[in-house]
Each structure stands twice: as structure tokens, then as C-alpha cells.
Amino acid sequence: MWLTRSLGVNLHPTSLPDGRLGPEAYAFVDWLASAGVRFWQVLPLNPPDEYGSPYASASAFAAWPGLLADPEATVEPSELRRFESENAYWIGDWVAFAGAQALAEQVRFQREWSALRAYAAERGVRLIGDVPIYVAEGGCDHAAHPMLFLPDDFVAGAPPDPLNDIGQKWGNPLYDWEALRREGFRWWTERMRRTLGLVDVFRIDHFRGFAGYWAVPAEAETAREGHWEPGPGVVTAAAEEPSGPLVLRSYTHARRFPMVIGRIAQFTLPWPLTPLQLAVFVGTVWLLVSLREVWPPLPMVVNLLVLVGVPVGLT
Image (cartoon, rainbow, N blue to C red; front, top):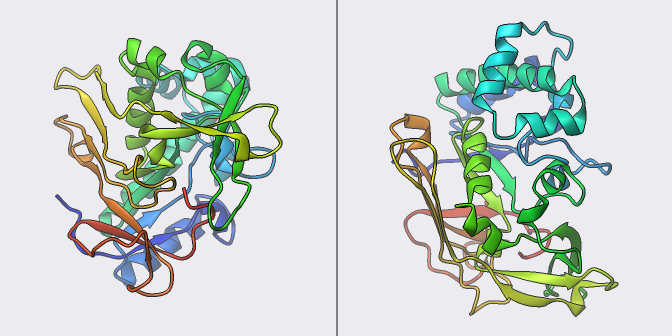
């Protein structure tokens, strides 16, 4: 395992001076390497919503062309065919949703991002991605796979907590976990395969939703009216690779805590490709002020990811 004691920095490319994958991004990698930082964590790379948030993206698979340093770069027909072949599960749905130019935009992003990622790896900096557990209502995934979601009577959210006494009503469609199970969790398998094609390791935002999720009536004004529903718990999704399955295990303390920041999850990807061999999510705590003020109160153990700062919404 290459996860040893190390330092990481969370900075989305939009926070760079030019907000693009150009010279400023490479200069940032140089700074990280010179400072001894081993991990660069970014927010979801998907297209942001109308408010600029990538956590309610129109696609769980597509990358945002707004990050491109050269959005008009030439794309060869061979590149288009290769990308279509390697991303056959989702790219057709995205092109149908976003328009004919979407394919070339994804090829350009893949080209620029892959070059930046290789540059970072050469300097000892690995990339950490971020995956929102839910998708946007009416987005490409919701429209292309309606059978994988529950009817719109209830939507996603989070219960009241010490920082928000009305909870959070997000409005995302909820997964039909039984439908996902019947298809062998193919959608999730493909989503993680796509993510690991862009980053070295990733976290799933609101991972506790695999253990249990807060369902809010669609007509409710706040999330107070919501209730807990059990998640799938242990998810086993068969990958197409002949080398074996993709396994997700959630060991979240869903029954003990109404809100969980500390969560332990394991992703096993027994594939022969080095970048795909490791995607292990370990215990997570929030370092609010000092090591004596960790939430939740968990012992400092090996393989503990400590996030500095006060979280927005303790879920």
C-alpha cells in the first residue's frame, strides 16, 4: 500500500488563478512537490449546476469542459473512436443529453487531465477525487436510467444536526437499491471505473448513505419530516474485467449515530493494473480545533484520514 503518513491539500482547479488545466495547474503541482505534499484532492470534476456546484452535476461520468485550457484544440477521428470504445457504457447517453459537441469535449478533457496527472505523478503527487453519492434530478443519469431510481415521492437529504436544526433537503432522486442489485450494481461499477481512470484514489461524499439514508417527502418544506431507510450495506458489483469483481463494503456506524463523519469503507479492486489495485477508504474524522476535539470522538489509529476544518453539514 502506498498510503503512508503524508500530507495532502484540497484545492479544486477552479480555485487556481486562471481556473483551468493550464500553466497555473502545473505551477501548483510544482509547489505541492516542493512543499513535500503527496496528495492533491479535488472536488468532483463533473459539470457544475446552475449555482456552480459540482455536487449536483448533470452527469456522474462526464467531466466539465469549463476546465479546459484549450477548449478549441483539434480532436482527431481516431481519438473520438477510441474514447467511445473505452467509455461505451455512458458516453452515448451524455452525447444525447448534452449535444454532439460533448464527445470532442470529453476527449479534450481526457487529454489535458491525463497530461496533468502524469506530470503530478512524476513529481510524487497523487490525485484524490471526490464522488457525490447522489445524482441530479433530471440529469443525464436520471434520464438514461430511470429504472434505477425510486419514484419522486421522496428525495435525498440529511437529518437535523447540531449545526442545522431543520436538516438538509437536497432534492436528489433516491436509488432503488433492489433494482441496482438486480443489475449487479453495474451502474456503480462503471462509475467507479470511470473515476479511477481520472484519479488515483477517491472518496464518496456522504458514504454513510450505503448503510442508511435520509428520505425526505418531496413536498416537505424542510428535512425534519424525513426518516431513515436502510441502504444496501454490502454491495458486490461484478466488473467486466476477467480478473474479478469490484467489492464495496460499508462499515458505517449507521445504527449508533444519526450522523456519521467517522466511517470505514473498503473498496477492493483485484485488477492487475497498478492504479486500480488500491482504493481503500479508511476511518475519517474532522479535526475541529485540535487532536482533543475530534468529531466523532474516535481514537487516533493507524490508517486514519484527518480532515482539517469544520464540515458543512455533519453527514
